[in-house]
Length: 206
Image (cartoon, rainbow, N blue to C red; front, top):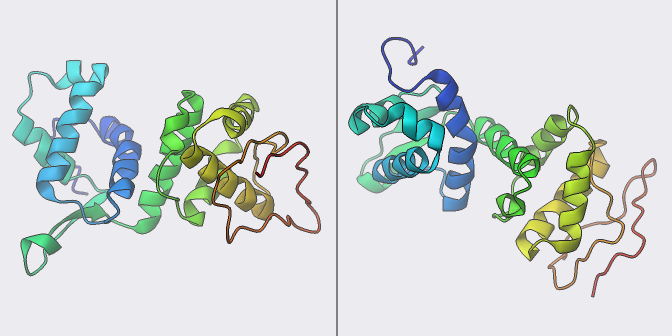
């Protein structure tokens, strides 16, 4: 593959960077990532991560940029003009998988702000459900505490995850006692399924 040969960025470090890249590119709103923006993002990540910063401090930034652009997870798109050129994930499902990895890592780290983003796709939430299946229940307890205390954007995405999880049978936090005041819950159905009704005691929907 394109990751063969001499590269400065270790394959494990590329995989480590992908969840953050998926979240950052999702927030950009456009799946096509401008080359200069991608390079600035890489420099920020290398500077902010102590391990990566130490490992690559003596390496050429140009070579590191080339390495990232040669990662098998992302592909170059050449359009008719510069606005149509850039990079994107090789497949939408790859971005959704890495975005799910980012969300689950946020729960592991207790970082509620990691969920405060534009609404992920239901496929992303399905990946979250699959990833949570192998984790201890303390992650669900963390998510439940966020439903009572986190900011609106985080709660909004957690509620959407919960509703998808009920539908698909994924592990999820309990909605009991959730503080959903002032959230836009239009177009959401809280019906649950015949097999799994949603238990929502003491939920605040003002």
